[in-house]
Image (cartoon, rainbow, N blue to C red; front, side, top):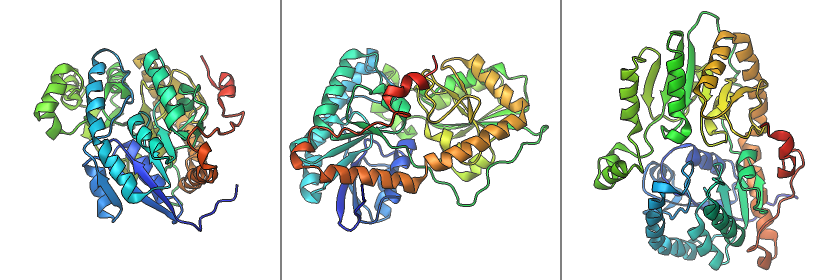
Length: 428
């Protein structure tokens, strides 16, 4: 379909967190690579993201919180059911969303994560199309949550956008879903890594939050299994899910006491000291991904328990750094074992350690996998191409007759990538 960039398009973006993690970095890269005729507006809670966008002159509307029915990596059962109180409590801020719709009069609303169904319902009632990005593999085991989310997605969301095939596979019953990958950026004309010298230290980088579902404890157990290998250094870049200021507040202490949050930074620091791993495990705290970090990295570790692939894998891969990734359903659209990465089962520190040792002992294999990753990811995650794909989706929605915008958009699926082909892509 020809893309028309001559007419202004007002898009209201909405995100549930103001932290500068992978979710919001992906959003920022997307906004920077959309056509100039897209007028961007943003609703987000107070925090670093709000300050960052506000300082650039972007119109940012502050909201204390956005109601989220389901959060990434944490199935809605057991003690997590307590978060439903927060879900209901944040619904009172719907008046801010309604006021923003009245003020901006957007052509469509783009929600930056799965679970923002209360906001989607508000937009649906205002007859404004909704694009909802799905960034994490969705929990399928809690059946009542699964059924409710599928029903709301079909009813209130015009188009779901999964960030990869693993994510789409987790919501495969939703007919209104297509895949548009996250954008990545890297300096132009930057050559990938060269072959590592055999006697040099091997730096294994973990670049993610320290939440248990990101697999940080599996990586630490891996480091413990390799403690005799003084040449393998584990560089951990990541912090707590919430700021130290919040954890020290009354609400933060209550979340720690009930187990809804963990002070992982201090837990990990004490564990490393107890296991006497200070020589090979280095804690750097939260930092944003940067070329400087990747230039000091030989292997990217992604031990997540989310059954999907995170930003750090392809952010490192564009520099020619191979990943050791953990997956349950080994869908091959991003990582392929022995081709551009080593892929092992989730929750298996021994397999993780074996894969790290294999790459550490074979610089040529490490180089070949990294080169393959760079070739693939520099095309698959090209920011300009992804910006054009998202804009084309917007345009498709707005060109549909108004009555059809509020059911769903059914995107034809390419056989090689669609759910129908997953049996060929998934290795059990």
